Amino acid sequence: MNNYSIVLFILAMMIGLSVVADRIKMAAPILLIVAGIAIGFVPGLPLIELNPEIILLIFLPPLLYDAAFNINFKTFKTNINTISTLAIGLVFVTACGIAVFAYYFIPGMTWPLAFVLGAILSATDAVAAISITKGLGLSHNTVTIIEGESLVNDASALVAYRFAIAAVTGTAFVLWKASLIFLALLAGGALVGLIMGKVLAFILRAVRNNNLAVLSFMVLAPFVTYLLAEELHVSGVIAVVILGLSISRLSSQRFPEHIRYESKTIWDMIIFILNGLIFILIGLEFPIVIKAIDKSQVWNYVLYAFLITIAALLLRMARVFLQKINLQRAFSAKKGKISEAALLTFEECMIISWSGMRGIVSLAIAIGLPKNIKTGEPFPMRSEIIFIATVAVLFTIVGQGLTLPWVVRKLKSTK
Image (cartoon, rainbow, N blue to C red; front, side, top):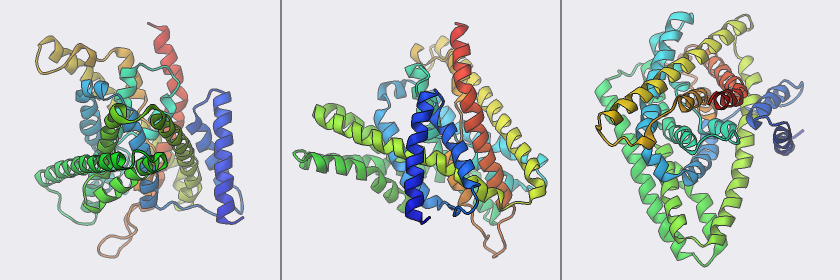
């Protein structure tokens, strides 16, 4: 079977399994990942190795753009305190927490390597969160917080990852320099997003009488924006999110109804295909990863991944409930701009905590670990880190994904 046939087979299977998942009322990502793992172990099937840069370029821009385009900006602004706390503060807390666990419990882990693993698994994934929470009847406020956090936290995780890799390869880490670089990456990404939003708005006005040109430019824009931002060494994630928010506001004000309808149809199809492919690819990658490690240590590493998943979940729950307390205090003291709409209920905190799945970004940056350090020596524990990260991703998507509907139903029944 040649590569072209394999791609067609995977696409057909993805569509079929998505229909089955809808029929049996199961989150499609879970079924697709399980199917991907099963296919990956089929004898004689060519191994499908992912190029992390290509994966991020193909999948991340359209998925981020679509989520940002459809998010309610007013609700996003109302909850900006919670979103920024989770998307920035919690990412670094999680990276540190996982690093501490890895250093003390996983044999052979140095502090730099432990922080690499922590950075890989520090951010929740927009694709997984949105796909699995869809159709659960969550409140608009809860969905916006989950989506908003996932839109921004990839940038934080990628920055943490870069500094962790630098530490492994011997580059000195200076906190104030790292903080300045982080702010510069965010600000630079936001600036690129704003400029590209203006450029796209100008182009769309110029070709507004040609529907196909309008729709084509809108599909092309997130890829160009992401690539341009990365070439300028700023955050492509933030650039695409800002672009999506900008064009969303322009669309609601200027676009005719038929253009909005056609655009939604096209994007729904693109997102459906990309979502399905992502989760099948995660499953297909697992057999490749497992072949690269010592077979006698497989179950030990699976246990470490499970414990890391639990630790990350507990850290997330603690930070979300602390945010609930902080918001209530600020609101009661009439300090700042915390409105009543920004307060969190117990049910919202539980759902937001349980929705912290990891996904394609964690997998892509894990696979993207350099094979050698500057001295030419192999990157220490590369295969082990990739395996633990991959298993942790599977635990969060399958474990939390399967139990999230039950958690939602249980919370609703206790009201």
